[in-house]
Image (cartoon, rainbow, N blue to C red; front, side):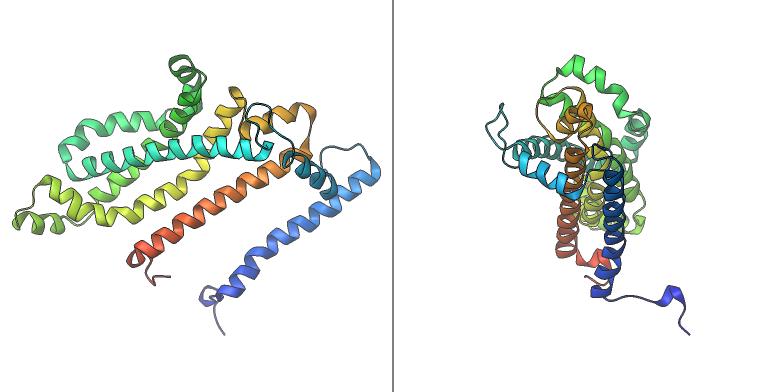
Length: 272
């Protein structure tokens, strides 16, 4: 008799098993929303799929007065621009600092405590400071994302580099490698898969900080739209927007995983 831990479903079975809970949730929601609307046709808490379909048709055809684009396109492009820049700044900063702190013990002793202190500060708490210093435009929103995820990524990457076998660095030094070459030739190639993994884990928190910033001070964006319509209890708009944000996050995660597996198959064991 096979043990439960030894059962490894094939790819098709994994897709089926993964989709089953989602299908069950959709069916449960369908029945719950229909029952609530049968009891109260004006119910807004659980909109029916037909009501959400009408809302989707609206925000995919209506034009945003600020940009002239359709509402969902304008919101998506604005949010992805802020998210992309924030993630990009955090990733580059974390990579450089992670290499520096991981390879150079003196730098780790000097900068490590500062990064640790910044990492434990709740990013939302510094949002008012960012608005005062950087204003209400794009800079403060992008800075919140970078500050929110950058220190954690830096600590993770620095710890990974510092934990690499010292023998690798010793052998490279015996061949004449300097500190710069140790970082680029020994640490960086092994760090890249870890960097991609750190970005994947940071996408969720980055969305949280983005939506928080857009909710406070913005005139376009996915987070702005959600908080704009919540005053009208427009769950028929909020739920599709939340689903769209989830799909964007899933797509970004899948793309990063694909890049990691194609570029660094050795880091995934079986290379799949």
